Amino acid sequence: MTEKLAGKVALVTGGGRGIGRAICQLFAEEGAQVGVADIDMELAKQTLETLPIPGRALQMDVSSKKEVEAGFSELVAHFGQLDILVNNAGILLSTTFEDCSEETWDRILAVNLKGTFFCCQAAIPFMKPRSRGAIVNMSSVAAKSGGFTGHPPYAAAKAGVSALTIGLARYLAPHRVRVNAIAPGVIDTDMTKTANHAELAARIPLGEVGTARDVAQGALFLASDEARHITGEIIDVNGGLWMD
Ligand code: NAD
Image (cartoon, rainbow, N blue to C red; front, side, top):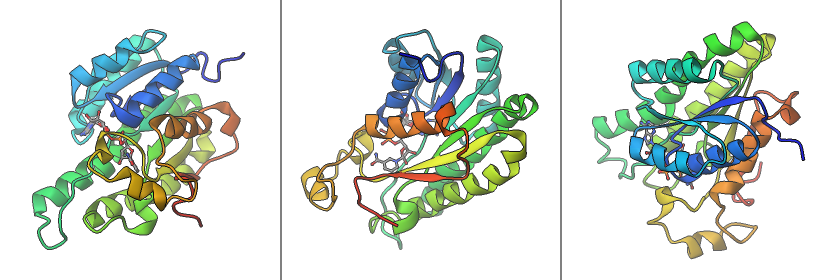
């Protein structure tokens, strides 16, 4: 069987656990050399140990432009190129609307939206001159639904990710760099561990909460040459939770 990402170098943010780890694993299974970037270096190293081919762990808080630039430089110095960026790092902080502090609002926007912006900016110099590259951003069903009651700031940040995806896709299309996103529904990871999965599954038409691997399959498709004519698209991976 041909590996779908043979010869490619990918950087996955938030690769230390959950959906990001599943993406790192699937990409490596498909032949990619993967940079596992995470704010938690220990988690990144743990992911690295599960990969079938050697990758590289990168210390990176995506909300820090300095750390983002250093991480991208380290990866390209090591592997010589960058073909795929997955902006997966994200945080979900629950708060009532009235009690959401300025610090909480700023952190949610800084990691989910500004982090995606910084990483896209850092990737462009390695993709645009080569007229090749694929960026996959991580939006959410919340970008369309507004999220659960404690999550309007998160939903706003993810709506920003979706808009950024489309705008950047249009900008980079003449340079053959594709930009797409995935909008997961409810996925079984640490992020959703406090939620009642049985209750949520009952609201999902396909009858179950998704797995990190389900989302990784979507990322693989968008990152691979199978999606060579797709850009500016946001793919729902939500079991039918939101249909439009
Ligand atoms: P998770 O909390 O299990 O994992 C997130 C990873 O990102 C962790 O390894 C964490 O250390 C890392 N991270 C956090 N802040 C970071 C930062 N500033 N810089 C770099 N790394 C950072 O989350 P998950 O469920 O795997 O979610 C992954 C992505 O999918 C997120 O963008 C999330 O918003 C999105 N998403 C998840 C769900 C879900 O149901 N789990 C649904 C919709 C969207």
